Image (cartoon, rainbow, N blue to C red; front, top):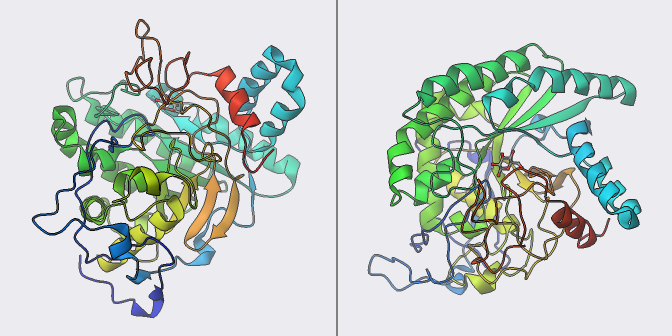
Length: 432
Ligand code: BGC
């Protein structure tokens, strides 16, 4: 794509702290495990940057670069002027923790008032969308105001190609690409179309294109690259409807913050969006999905000093800069704040699984910062990232006894991890 001609929308902002210019050569992202809806490919040891012979850039060297952003049209923000759909299936999980831990009932109960995304992680789950939207319509009636329902669309063939925790049901070998288009996306699209009055947000395929951007050294990711790209284009094409706002996954600061990585992901977006019928089909991008990066400050800057994006708010500005320079303009961001309340809990910025000491982050809210449509709890807090028991299905070594940043005792990805949920509530920042 060529550079945008919508220069009227360009805004030059000085970068306050550690920024990064689009033209700056930056380290190829360290690669490594980039797992379950939460991945980060940046093990601590991977600090040696591939600078193509140039001196290694540092955050300080980039600090004075201006950033070019193109703000999204505010009227397109699906989170404004509406309430949020509360998923009763999630409330049930919280209730189970209250039963097990009645002493903390007052605190835990507070979580039930906040919305979480409904994860469509299988063809069976896609079959529940109509019911969810009927339920949302009933909640709307009761509330006397429109509500937005947020889905995470997550059943790509060869899913979670760089890890094992969230490997899915569809593969290349079992005809996954066709099934994904027809039985998964087709079902979801039909349900969305049957509820044209409901306001819907869909977060499209966490971790998928970021894995293709940085983890092609993993055979499973390299083999899946074309299937990912085609399937995501199909998802965008089919789900881009008048009542639906789409956000493509953009990993997080600790994964794609380096300008070289931002360029890689933006090139993939260009390719996929072209195939899907154009960049206008999506409202924007989702960051930090199932991850733990801070909104501002935090510890990423210390753990990854060569990463010019030390936190998510810097990252969305920098990613918007790269997008804008490549001609994808006017995009908005949703940041997952379900578990990023507490910083300083990781010894390795690449740790992503059930991080010990985590707390709930900012409550879901519309328009909290420039470029940001919403903070939202995309990963339902209390759902596990991956299993900790080597002898049980769903085990991932990133979640087990060898991962010192991970809380012990976790069930498989997506299952309820009650003690972890209680800790998230106790560690909430802002407090509940
Ligand atoms: C799991 C999904 C689950 C989602 C939300 C992912 O890590 O693989 O099955 O629905 O998390 O908890």
